[in-house]
View (cartoon, helix red, strand yellow):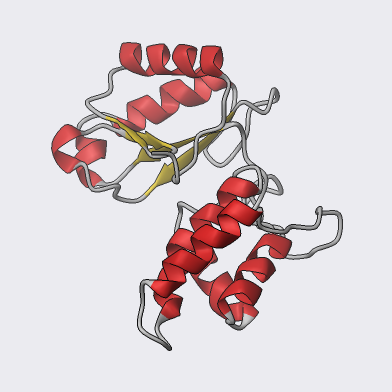
Length: 185
């Protein structure tokens, strides 16, 4: 694992984190959906909210805030955040391109797609472009095997990708230049 992709496991040098009032209200509403003693079931959507409010990544401060809001031990939050590839434990670009690399996508060209994106963006998987615009990640199954190869950017799936359609996507994202998150509607 390169220094660029190593999780940041300290609060040193990272800014403090606090949920906005709207996000805190959303967190409380999510937890209220579950019976008493079962609010931990809201952990994944609440981590998405925290990541969205923290420039696309979960700092230790952000995870600690989640633990505090939910009444959980910090380690319970860290375990979940570090398990799923949808959570970023270091700063990322404006756009995170999660390219599926499991067998169905690989058989339909995801390796070629990743190689092309690495060359086009000038980064390797797990790295962010110098301009801070794109982070490229190779991830496990995103559940769109019938439309391989595909990538996810925020809440959007981009399926049946070709080199040309991937280039068009990169160009469209550059022109848009607005962070996307899993919480986008």
